[in-house]
Image: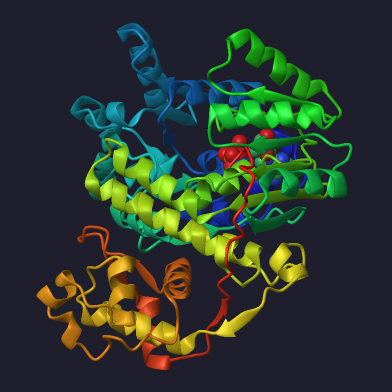
Length: 519
Ligand code: ADP
Ligand code: ZN
Protein backbone atom coordinates (compact mmCIF):
# COMPACT_ATOMS: atom_id res chain seq x y z
CA UNK A 1 0.00 0.00 0.00
CA UNK A 2 1.37 3.42 -0.85
CA UNK A 3 -0.84 5.25 1.61
CA UNK A 4 0.89 7.46 4.14
CA UNK A 5 -0.28 7.48 7.76
CA UNK A 6 -1.68 10.99 7.36
CA UNK A 7 -3.60 10.15 4.21
CA UNK A 8 -5.09 7.11 5.93
CA UNK A 9 -6.09 9.25 8.90
CA UNK A 10 -7.86 11.67 6.59
CA UNK A 11 -9.33 9.30 4.03
CA UNK A 12 -10.45 6.45 6.26
CA UNK A 13 -10.95 8.02 9.66
CA UNK A 14 -11.92 11.50 8.56
CA UNK A 15 -9.66 13.28 11.06
CA UNK A 16 -7.38 16.18 10.18
CA UNK A 17 -4.42 15.68 12.43
CA UNK A 18 -2.80 13.21 14.78
CA UNK A 19 -3.12 13.69 18.48
CA UNK A 20 -0.31 13.66 21.01
CA UNK A 21 2.18 10.94 20.24
CA UNK A 22 0.07 8.97 17.77
CA UNK A 23 2.18 9.97 14.81
CA UNK A 24 5.46 9.06 16.53
CA UNK A 25 4.15 5.64 17.51
CA UNK A 26 2.78 4.99 14.04
CA UNK A 27 5.98 5.99 12.25
CA UNK A 28 8.02 3.86 14.61
CA UNK A 29 5.85 0.77 14.12
CA UNK A 30 5.52 1.23 10.36
CA UNK A 31 9.30 1.03 10.21
CA UNK A 32 9.15 -2.28 12.08
CA UNK A 33 9.95 -1.11 15.62
CA UNK A 34 8.56 -2.60 18.82
CA UNK A 35 6.57 -0.25 21.02
CA UNK A 36 4.99 0.09 24.42
CA UNK A 37 2.11 2.57 24.47
CA UNK A 38 0.67 3.88 27.73
CA UNK A 39 -2.09 6.43 27.22
CA UNK A 40 -5.34 6.99 29.06
CA UNK A 41 -8.66 5.71 27.80
CA UNK A 42 -9.94 7.84 24.97
CA UNK A 43 -6.49 9.06 23.95
CA UNK A 44 -6.69 7.18 20.66
CA UNK A 45 -4.54 4.09 21.13
CA UNK A 46 -6.38 2.01 18.52
CA UNK A 47 -5.04 4.13 15.67
CA UNK A 48 -1.53 3.44 16.89
CA UNK A 49 -1.75 -0.12 15.58
CA UNK A 50 -4.56 0.17 13.05
CA UNK A 51 -2.79 2.66 10.82
CA UNK A 52 0.50 0.70 10.81
CA UNK A 53 -1.61 -2.36 9.97
CA UNK A 54 -2.76 -0.59 6.83
CA UNK A 55 0.69 0.71 5.94
CA UNK A 56 2.52 -2.58 6.34
CA UNK A 57 2.16 -5.69 4.21
CA UNK A 58 0.19 -8.59 5.60
CA UNK A 59 -2.37 -8.99 8.34
CA UNK A 60 -2.09 -7.38 11.78
CA UNK A 61 -2.95 -9.78 14.59
CA UNK A 62 -4.62 -7.96 17.47
CA UNK A 63 -4.81 -9.69 20.84
CA UNK A 64 -7.78 -8.50 22.84
CA UNK A 65 -9.24 -10.00 26.00
CA UNK A 66 -12.95 -9.48 25.45
CA UNK A 67 -15.13 -10.65 22.60
CA UNK A 68 -17.43 -7.64 23.11
CA UNK A 69 -14.48 -5.27 22.69
CA UNK A 70 -13.40 -7.04 19.51
CA UNK A 71 -16.86 -6.77 18.06
CA UNK A 72 -17.01 -3.02 18.79
CA UNK A 73 -13.72 -2.49 17.01
CA UNK A 74 -14.74 -4.56 14.02
CA UNK A 75 -18.02 -2.69 13.68
CA UNK A 76 -16.19 0.63 13.82
CA UNK A 77 -13.66 -0.53 11.21
CA UNK A 78 -16.47 -1.77 8.96
CA UNK A 79 -17.96 1.71 8.95
CA UNK A 80 -14.66 3.03 7.64
CA UNK A 81 -14.27 0.34 5.00
CA UNK A 82 -11.29 -1.20 6.71
CA UNK A 83 -11.36 -4.98 6.43
CA UNK A 84 -11.15 -6.78 9.71
CA UNK A 85 -12.41 -9.96 11.33
CA UNK A 86 -12.26 -11.87 14.58
CA UNK A 87 -11.67 -15.46 15.45
CA UNK A 88 -13.13 -16.42 18.79
CA UNK A 89 -14.79 -19.18 20.74
CA UNK A 90 -18.34 -18.18 19.80
CA UNK A 91 -17.75 -19.01 16.12
CA UNK A 92 -18.48 -22.27 14.31
CA UNK A 93 -15.78 -24.29 12.59
CA UNK A 94 -17.05 -23.10 9.19
CA UNK A 95 -16.95 -19.46 10.22
CA UNK A 96 -13.42 -19.81 11.48
CA UNK A 97 -12.34 -21.54 8.27
CA UNK A 98 -13.85 -18.76 6.19
CA UNK A 99 -11.91 -16.12 8.11
CA UNK A 100 -8.73 -18.14 7.83
CA UNK A 101 -9.19 -18.34 4.10
CA UNK A 102 -9.60 -14.56 3.83
CA UNK A 103 -6.47 -14.06 5.89
CA UNK A 104 -4.51 -16.42 3.63
CA UNK A 105 -5.80 -14.61 0.56
CA UNK A 106 -4.67 -11.35 2.05
CA UNK A 107 -8.06 -9.66 1.99
CA UNK A 108 -8.11 -8.82 5.69
CA UNK A 109 -5.99 -6.13 7.31
CA UNK A 110 -6.73 -6.73 10.98
CA UNK A 111 -7.47 -10.02 12.70
CA UNK A 112 -8.70 -9.89 16.32
CA UNK A 113 -8.08 -12.93 18.49
CA UNK A 114 -8.26 -13.84 22.16
CA UNK A 115 -4.93 -14.83 23.71
CA UNK A 116 -5.94 -18.42 24.41
CA UNK A 117 -6.83 -18.85 20.74
CA UNK A 118 -3.60 -17.34 19.56
CA UNK A 119 -1.58 -19.76 21.64
CA UNK A 120 -3.22 -22.90 20.22
CA UNK A 121 -0.56 -24.91 18.35
CA UNK A 122 -2.82 -25.27 15.36
CA UNK A 123 -3.38 -21.51 15.18
CA UNK A 124 0.31 -20.76 15.57
CA UNK A 125 1.20 -23.02 12.68
CA UNK A 126 -1.50 -21.32 10.65
CA UNK A 127 0.16 -17.98 11.44
CA UNK A 128 3.53 -19.39 10.41
CA UNK A 129 2.16 -19.60 6.88
CA UNK A 130 0.71 -16.07 6.89
CA UNK A 131 2.30 -12.78 6.17
CA UNK A 132 1.98 -10.91 9.49
CA UNK A 133 2.22 -7.13 9.53
CA UNK A 134 2.47 -6.78 13.31
CA UNK A 135 1.17 -8.05 16.62
CA UNK A 136 -0.84 -5.60 18.71
CA UNK A 137 -1.37 -6.59 22.32
CA UNK A 138 -4.28 -4.59 23.66
CA UNK A 139 -4.91 -4.28 27.43
CA UNK A 140 -1.28 -5.28 27.81
CA UNK A 141 -1.34 -4.82 31.60
CA UNK A 142 -3.01 -8.25 31.68
CA UNK A 143 0.39 -9.87 31.06
CA UNK A 144 1.73 -8.65 34.39
CA UNK A 145 1.06 -10.03 37.81
CA UNK A 146 1.87 -6.55 39.09
CA UNK A 147 -1.00 -5.04 37.17
CA UNK A 148 -4.50 -5.10 38.54
CA UNK A 149 -5.98 -7.51 36.03
CA UNK A 150 -3.52 -10.34 35.50
CA UNK A 151 -4.64 -13.04 33.06
CA UNK A 152 -2.64 -16.24 32.82
CA UNK A 153 -3.54 -16.53 29.12
CA UNK A 154 -1.70 -13.31 28.49
CA UNK A 155 1.49 -14.55 30.15
CA UNK A 156 1.99 -17.05 27.33
CA UNK A 157 2.31 -14.15 24.86
CA UNK A 158 5.95 -13.85 25.86
CA UNK A 159 6.70 -16.52 23.27
CA UNK A 160 5.67 -14.31 20.36
CA UNK A 161 9.09 -12.70 20.37
CA UNK A 162 10.83 -16.06 19.93
CA UNK A 163 8.46 -17.55 17.43
CA UNK A 164 8.02 -14.46 15.26
CA UNK A 165 11.23 -12.49 15.81
CA UNK A 166 10.78 -10.37 12.71
CA UNK A 167 7.24 -9.23 13.38
CA UNK A 168 6.96 -5.96 15.34
CA UNK A 169 5.03 -6.00 18.59
CA UNK A 170 2.98 -3.10 19.96
CA UNK A 171 1.71 -3.39 23.54
CA UNK A 172 -1.01 -0.92 24.56
CA UNK A 173 -2.60 -0.13 27.89
CA UNK A 174 -4.33 2.69 29.73
CA UNK A 175 -3.18 1.61 33.14
CA UNK A 176 0.26 0.59 34.35
CA UNK A 177 2.46 2.00 37.08
CA UNK A 178 6.25 1.89 36.76
CA UNK A 179 6.55 -1.65 38.05
CA UNK A 180 3.81 -3.07 35.83
CA UNK A 181 5.23 -1.24 32.89
CA UNK A 182 8.71 -2.66 33.37
CA UNK A 183 7.19 -6.09 33.68
CA UNK A 184 5.21 -5.75 30.44
CA UNK A 185 8.30 -4.55 28.58
CA UNK A 186 10.25 -7.48 29.96
CA UNK A 187 7.66 -10.18 29.32
CA UNK A 188 6.88 -9.10 25.80
CA UNK A 189 10.57 -8.53 25.05
CA UNK A 190 10.13 -4.91 24.09
CA UNK A 191 13.45 -3.82 25.60
CA UNK A 192 14.82 -2.84 22.22
CA UNK A 193 11.65 -0.92 21.37
CA UNK A 194 10.39 2.49 22.40
CA UNK A 195 7.98 3.51 25.12
CA UNK A 196 5.36 6.11 24.37
CA UNK A 197 3.77 7.48 27.48
CA UNK A 198 1.60 10.51 27.67
CA UNK A 199 -1.63 12.26 27.42
CA UNK A 200 -2.50 11.61 31.04
CA UNK A 201 -2.93 15.22 32.01
CA UNK A 202 -6.44 16.56 32.49
CA UNK A 203 -5.54 20.22 32.79
CA UNK A 204 -9.11 21.41 33.35
CA UNK A 205 -9.52 19.38 36.55
CA UNK A 206 -8.50 21.11 39.77
CA UNK A 207 -7.32 18.55 42.33
CA UNK A 208 -7.75 19.15 46.00
CA UNK A 209 -7.23 16.72 48.88
CA UNK A 210 -8.00 17.53 52.50
CA UNK A 211 -8.00 15.81 55.84
CA UNK A 212 -11.53 14.82 56.72
CA UNK A 213 -12.42 16.53 59.95
CA UNK A 214 -16.00 17.59 59.46
CA UNK A 215 -17.08 15.74 56.32
CA UNK A 216 -20.61 17.04 55.89
CA UNK A 217 -19.62 20.63 56.46
CA UNK A 218 -16.61 20.30 54.21
CA UNK A 219 -18.81 19.01 51.41
CA UNK A 220 -21.54 21.56 51.99
CA UNK A 221 -19.03 24.40 51.86
CA UNK A 222 -17.49 22.96 48.69
CA UNK A 223 -20.89 22.70 47.00
CA UNK A 224 -22.01 26.17 48.07
CA UNK A 225 -18.74 27.91 47.21
CA UNK A 226 -17.86 26.16 44.00
CA UNK A 227 -20.83 24.31 42.58
CA UNK A 228 -24.11 25.87 43.59
CA UNK A 229 -25.77 24.84 40.34
CA UNK A 230 -23.80 21.95 38.94
CA UNK A 231 -23.96 18.24 38.34
CA UNK A 232 -21.48 16.04 40.09
CA UNK A 233 -20.72 12.75 41.78
CA UNK A 234 -20.04 12.14 45.47
CA UNK A 235 -18.42 8.78 46.15
CA UNK A 236 -18.96 7.11 49.54
CA UNK A 237 -17.54 3.89 50.86
CA UNK A 238 -20.68 1.97 51.77
CA UNK A 239 -24.33 1.70 50.83
CA UNK A 240 -25.29 3.04 54.23
CA UNK A 241 -23.04 6.10 53.82
CA UNK A 242 -24.58 6.71 50.40
CA UNK A 243 -28.13 6.62 51.76
CA UNK A 244 -27.33 8.88 54.69
CA UNK A 245 -25.39 11.41 52.67
CA UNK A 246 -28.04 11.65 49.95
CA UNK A 247 -30.81 12.08 52.53
CA UNK A 248 -28.83 14.71 54.38
CA UNK A 249 -28.11 16.73 51.22
CA UNK A 250 -31.80 16.66 50.36
CA UNK A 251 -32.56 18.01 53.85
CA UNK A 252 -30.19 20.86 53.03
CA UNK A 253 -32.23 21.60 49.93
CA UNK A 254 -29.76 20.09 47.48
CA UNK A 255 -31.09 17.62 44.93
CA UNK A 256 -29.16 14.42 45.48
CA UNK A 257 -29.89 10.85 44.43
CA UNK A 258 -28.44 7.64 45.81
CA UNK A 259 -26.85 4.92 43.68
CA UNK A 260 -25.47 1.61 44.88
CA UNK A 261 -25.69 -2.07 44.08
CA UNK A 262 -28.23 -2.64 46.85
CA UNK A 263 -30.96 -0.62 45.10
CA UNK A 264 -33.36 -2.34 42.71
CA UNK A 265 -32.38 -2.16 39.06
CA UNK A 266 -35.41 0.06 38.34
CA UNK A 267 -34.38 2.62 40.93
CA UNK A 268 -30.81 2.56 39.72
CA UNK A 269 -31.85 3.03 36.09
CA UNK A 270 -34.22 5.83 37.10
CA UNK A 271 -31.61 7.69 39.14
CA UNK A 272 -28.99 7.27 36.46
CA UNK A 273 -31.41 8.66 33.89
CA UNK A 274 -32.19 11.65 36.12
CA UNK A 275 -28.48 12.29 36.51
CA UNK A 276 -27.75 12.02 32.79
CA UNK A 277 -30.57 14.40 31.88
CA UNK A 278 -30.58 16.73 34.86
CA UNK A 279 -28.87 20.08 35.04
CA UNK A 280 -28.34 20.15 38.76
CA UNK A 281 -28.38 16.60 40.05
CA UNK A 282 -25.84 15.20 42.43
CA UNK A 283 -25.29 11.48 42.40
CA UNK A 284 -24.23 10.11 45.76
CA UNK A 285 -22.82 6.70 44.94
CA UNK A 286 -20.54 3.81 45.66
CA UNK A 287 -17.98 2.95 43.02
CA UNK A 288 -20.68 0.77 41.44
CA UNK A 289 -21.58 4.02 39.65
CA UNK A 290 -19.57 5.49 36.84
CA UNK A 291 -18.37 2.78 34.47
CA UNK A 292 -19.50 3.70 31.02
CA UNK A 293 -21.16 6.93 32.17
CA UNK A 294 -20.29 9.45 29.52
CA UNK A 295 -21.80 12.71 30.70
CA UNK A 296 -19.61 15.54 29.43
CA UNK A 297 -20.61 18.19 31.97
CA UNK A 298 -19.96 16.45 35.28
CA UNK A 299 -18.46 19.46 37.05
CA UNK A 300 -17.09 17.77 40.16
CA UNK A 301 -16.21 14.45 41.74
CA UNK A 302 -15.94 14.21 45.53
CA UNK A 303 -14.42 11.27 47.36
CA UNK A 304 -15.61 11.08 50.97
CA UNK A 305 -12.89 8.48 51.64
CA UNK A 306 -9.73 7.43 49.87
CA UNK A 307 -10.18 5.06 46.95
CA UNK A 308 -8.01 1.95 46.92
CA UNK A 309 -5.16 3.28 44.80
CA UNK A 310 -4.03 6.07 42.48
CA UNK A 311 -5.24 4.26 39.36
CA UNK A 312 -8.76 4.07 40.78
CA UNK A 313 -8.60 7.70 41.96
CA UNK A 314 -7.49 8.92 38.56
CA UNK A 315 -10.12 6.93 36.76
CA UNK A 316 -12.89 8.10 39.08
CA UNK A 317 -11.89 11.77 39.07
CA UNK A 318 -11.47 11.51 35.29
CA UNK A 319 -15.26 11.39 35.03
CA UNK A 320 -15.30 15.14 35.74
CA UNK A 321 -14.96 17.69 32.98
CA UNK A 322 -14.91 15.57 29.86
CA UNK A 323 -16.09 18.66 28.00
CA UNK A 324 -12.80 20.35 28.85
CA UNK A 325 -14.38 23.06 31.03
CA UNK A 326 -13.06 23.81 34.54
CA UNK A 327 -14.00 21.10 37.03
CA UNK A 328 -13.08 20.07 40.54
CA UNK A 329 -11.96 16.87 42.20
CA UNK A 330 -12.08 16.93 45.99
CA UNK A 331 -10.93 14.05 48.16
CA UNK A 332 -11.36 13.87 51.92
CA UNK A 333 -9.10 11.42 53.68
CA UNK A 334 -8.32 10.17 57.12
CA UNK A 335 -5.94 7.60 58.44
CA UNK A 336 -8.91 5.39 59.32
CA UNK A 337 -9.30 4.96 55.57
CA UNK A 338 -5.89 3.34 55.40
CA UNK A 339 -6.79 0.99 58.22
CA UNK A 340 -10.08 0.10 56.54
CA UNK A 341 -8.49 -0.51 53.15
CA UNK A 342 -5.73 -2.59 54.70
CA UNK A 343 -8.30 -4.70 56.48
CA UNK A 344 -10.13 -5.31 53.19
CA UNK A 345 -6.93 -6.25 51.45
CA UNK A 346 -6.09 -8.73 54.17
CA UNK A 347 -9.61 -10.17 54.21
CA UNK A 348 -9.61 -10.78 50.45
CA UNK A 349 -8.81 -14.17 48.98
CA UNK A 350 -6.04 -12.80 46.77
CA UNK A 351 -2.65 -14.54 46.97
CA UNK A 352 -0.12 -13.02 49.34
CA UNK A 353 1.95 -11.50 46.54
CA UNK A 354 -1.09 -9.63 45.25
CA UNK A 355 -1.91 -8.35 48.70
CA UNK A 356 1.57 -6.89 49.00
CA UNK A 357 1.10 -5.06 45.75
CA UNK A 358 -2.22 -3.69 46.89
CA UNK A 359 -0.71 -2.48 50.16
CA UNK A 360 2.04 -0.78 48.27
CA UNK A 361 -0.38 0.93 45.92
CA UNK A 362 -2.39 2.10 48.89
CA UNK A 363 0.82 3.57 50.32
CA UNK A 364 1.37 5.54 47.13
CA UNK A 365 -2.15 6.90 47.37
CA UNK A 366 -1.47 8.16 50.89
CA UNK A 367 1.68 9.68 49.51
CA UNK A 368 -0.45 11.68 47.12
CA UNK A 369 -2.66 12.78 50.04
CA UNK A 370 0.27 13.97 52.11
CA UNK A 371 2.58 15.33 49.49
CA UNK A 372 3.72 18.92 49.69
CA UNK A 373 4.33 18.92 45.95
CA UNK A 374 1.94 19.78 43.12
CA UNK A 375 -0.76 17.09 43.10
CA UNK A 376 -0.76 16.93 39.33
CA UNK A 377 2.98 16.35 39.24
CA UNK A 378 2.64 13.47 41.68
CA UNK A 379 -0.27 11.99 39.72
CA UNK A 380 1.44 12.28 36.36
CA UNK A 381 4.73 10.98 37.73
CA UNK A 382 2.89 7.96 38.97
CA UNK A 383 1.98 7.20 35.36
CA UNK A 384 5.44 8.22 34.19
CA UNK A 385 4.10 11.33 32.58
CA UNK A 386 5.38 14.78 33.52
CA UNK A 387 4.37 18.39 34.02
CA UNK A 388 5.53 21.59 35.68
CA UNK A 389 3.82 22.70 38.94
CA UNK A 390 0.36 23.27 37.59
CA UNK A 391 -1.10 26.24 39.44
CA UNK A 392 -4.43 24.41 39.39
CA UNK A 393 -4.37 22.23 42.50
CA UNK A 394 -4.62 22.92 46.21
CA UNK A 395 -0.91 22.58 46.94
CA UNK A 396 -0.03 24.97 44.10
CA UNK A 397 -2.69 27.44 45.15
CA UNK A 398 -1.92 27.28 48.87
CA UNK A 399 1.45 25.68 49.44
CA UNK A 400 1.30 23.68 52.68
CA UNK A 401 3.71 24.44 55.48
CA UNK A 402 6.71 22.21 55.15
CA UNK A 403 9.89 21.46 57.05
CA UNK A 404 13.19 20.01 55.86
CA UNK A 405 12.88 16.36 56.75
CA UNK A 406 16.27 15.37 55.39
CA UNK A 407 17.71 14.37 58.80
CA UNK A 408 14.65 12.44 60.04
CA UNK A 409 14.44 10.76 56.64
CA UNK A 410 18.08 9.67 56.87
CA UNK A 411 17.45 8.28 60.34
CA UNK A 412 14.34 6.46 59.21
CA UNK A 413 15.94 4.95 56.13
CA UNK A 414 19.05 3.82 57.99
CA UNK A 415 16.79 2.26 60.58
CA UNK A 416 15.14 0.27 57.78
CA UNK A 417 18.57 -0.72 56.51
CA UNK A 418 20.03 -1.76 59.85
CA UNK A 419 17.02 -3.85 60.80
CA UNK A 420 17.34 -5.83 57.58
CA UNK A 421 14.60 -4.29 55.40
CA UNK A 422 11.82 -6.51 56.70
CA UNK A 423 9.88 -4.63 59.42
CA UNK A 424 6.69 -2.59 59.40
CA UNK A 425 6.31 1.05 60.42
CA UNK A 426 5.20 0.37 64.01
CA UNK A 427 8.35 -1.61 64.73
CA UNK A 428 10.66 0.86 63.00
CA UNK A 429 9.17 3.76 64.94
CA UNK A 430 9.68 1.87 68.21
CA UNK A 431 13.34 1.37 67.35
CA UNK A 432 13.79 5.05 66.51
CA UNK A 433 12.08 6.11 69.73
CA UNK A 434 14.16 3.65 71.71
CA UNK A 435 11.16 1.77 73.04
CA UNK A 436 12.22 -1.33 74.96
CA UNK A 437 10.08 -4.31 74.05
CA UNK A 438 10.56 -8.05 73.79
CA UNK A 439 10.61 -8.22 70.04
CA UNK A 440 13.26 -5.53 69.75
CA UNK A 441 15.49 -7.15 72.36
CA UNK A 442 14.92 -10.55 70.80
CA UNK A 443 16.33 -9.28 67.49
CA UNK A 444 19.08 -7.41 69.31
CA UNK A 445 17.93 -4.16 67.74
CA UNK A 446 18.31 -2.32 71.03
CA UNK A 447 22.03 -2.55 70.29
CA UNK A 448 21.81 -0.71 66.98
CA UNK A 449 23.22 2.80 66.61
CA UNK A 450 19.77 3.92 65.37
CA UNK A 451 18.06 2.68 68.54
CA UNK A 452 16.61 5.75 70.26
CA UNK A 453 18.03 8.34 67.85
CA UNK A 454 14.56 9.62 67.05
CA UNK A 455 13.42 11.01 70.36
CA UNK A 456 13.15 14.52 68.97
CA UNK A 457 9.94 13.53 67.16
CA UNK A 458 6.73 12.00 68.51
CA UNK A 459 5.27 8.72 67.39
CA UNK A 460 2.66 10.26 65.04
CA UNK A 461 5.33 12.55 63.63
CA UNK A 462 7.48 9.55 62.80
CA UNK A 463 4.52 7.77 61.24
CA UNK A 464 4.00 10.87 59.14
CA UNK A 465 7.64 10.81 58.03
CA UNK A 466 7.39 7.14 57.08
CA UNK A 467 4.18 7.62 55.13
CA UNK A 468 5.73 10.39 53.13
CA UNK A 469 8.88 8.35 52.49
CA UNK A 470 6.70 5.58 51.14
CA UNK A 471 4.69 8.11 49.25
CA UNK A 472 7.72 9.58 47.58
CA UNK A 473 8.92 6.10 46.79
CA UNK A 474 12.09 6.17 48.89
CA UNK A 475 10.76 3.16 50.77
CA UNK A 476 8.51 0.44 49.43
CA UNK A 477 7.05 -2.81 50.67
CA UNK A 478 9.50 -5.69 50.52
CA UNK A 479 7.77 -8.22 48.26
CA UNK A 480 9.40 -10.99 50.25
CA UNK A 481 8.63 -9.73 53.74
CA UNK A 482 5.37 -9.93 55.64
CA UNK A 483 4.45 -6.29 55.32
CA UNK A 484 8.02 -5.08 55.90
CA UNK A 485 9.60 -2.15 54.08
CA UNK A 486 12.73 -1.97 51.99
CA UNK A 487 14.77 0.84 50.49
CA UNK A 488 14.16 1.69 46.84
CA UNK A 489 16.82 2.73 44.38
CA UNK A 490 15.73 6.34 44.91
CA UNK A 491 16.04 5.76 48.66
CA UNK A 492 19.65 4.62 48.31
CA UNK A 493 20.42 7.60 46.12
CA UNK A 494 18.90 9.83 48.79
CA UNK A 495 21.09 8.26 51.51
CA UNK A 496 24.19 8.87 49.42
CA UNK A 497 23.41 12.41 48.44
CA UNK A 498 21.41 13.56 51.48
CA UNK A 499 19.55 16.36 49.66
CA UNK A 500 17.00 18.62 51.35
CA UNK A 501 13.61 16.95 51.60
CA UNK A 502 10.63 19.22 52.19
CA UNK A 503 7.76 17.44 53.92
CA UNK A 504 4.33 18.46 55.03
CA UNK A 505 4.06 19.06 58.77
CA UNK A 506 2.18 16.49 60.73
CA UNK A 507 -1.30 17.90 61.29
CA UNK A 508 -3.13 16.62 64.28
CA UNK A 509 -6.51 15.43 63.07
CA UNK A 510 -9.45 17.29 64.57
CA UNK A 511 -11.63 14.95 66.54
CA UNK A 512 -15.25 15.46 65.78
CA UNK A 513 -17.58 15.27 68.78
CA UNK A 514 -20.75 14.85 66.79
CA UNK A 515 -20.49 11.69 64.76
CA UNK A 516 -20.47 13.22 61.32
CA UNK A 517 -22.18 10.84 58.94
CA UNK A 518 -20.65 9.87 55.71
CA UNK A 519 -17.15 8.87 56.68
P1 ADP B 1 -8.32 4.38 23.42
O1 ADP B 1 -8.18 3.04 22.74
O2 ADP B 1 -7.03 5.03 23.72
O3 ADP B 1 -9.25 4.38 24.59
P2 ADP B 1 -9.63 5.06 20.96
O4 ADP B 1 -8.59 4.55 20.05
O5 ADP B 1 -10.87 4.25 21.14
O6 ADP B 1 -9.01 5.37 22.39
O7 ADP B 1 -10.00 6.54 20.51
C1 ADP B 1 -10.92 7.33 21.23
C2 ADP B 1 -11.70 8.23 20.29
O8 ADP B 1 -10.87 9.24 19.76
C3 ADP B 1 -12.24 7.47 19.08
O9 ADP B 1 -13.54 7.93 18.84
C4 ADP B 1 -11.29 7.84 17.98
O10 ADP B 1 -11.87 7.73 16.71
C5 ADP B 1 -10.93 9.26 18.34
N1 ADP B 1 -9.63 9.67 17.79
C6 ADP B 1 -8.50 8.96 17.82
N2 ADP B 1 -7.49 9.63 17.22
C7 ADP B 1 -8.00 10.81 16.82
C8 ADP B 1 -7.45 11.95 16.13
N3 ADP B 1 -6.17 12.01 15.75
N4 ADP B 1 -8.28 12.98 15.88
C9 ADP B 1 -9.57 12.94 16.28
N5 ADP B 1 -10.14 11.91 16.91
C10 ADP B 1 -9.38 10.84 17.19
ZN1 ZN C 1 -0.40 21.79 41.04
